[in-house]
Image (tube, rainbow, N blue to C red; front, top):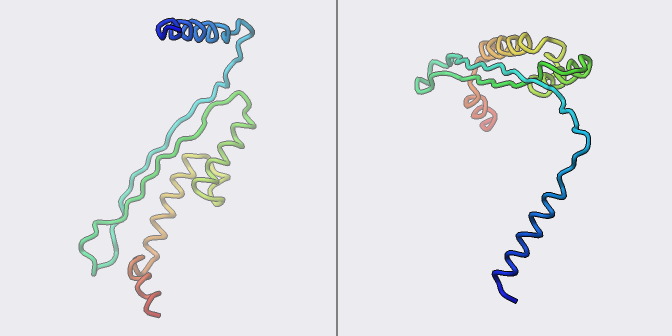
Length: 128
């Protein structure tokens, strides 16, 4: 059998199969779900006076979450799950932007409360 004939026949069968897959039935309506993002980038100065090479700690958050969905109850549950999985249970009951702002604030307070850097803590743990 000629190779050109085989290729032509294969192409014809492929086109026929692809055109047969197109259905003229009822189209399915897509879920109309919309997303927004909260972006935060904040640098916290290092309190360790011994380490002059480090400029600070950088907290970067790019949090994309659903804002619109037909079923309001489902939307709120999904938003709560997004917050819980990204920021933790502490922030799950807050509105998203408020939860992110509170997380950033708490992160800064946590850093200020620390007396030693992570490196110093790791070093102390190994020598003890």
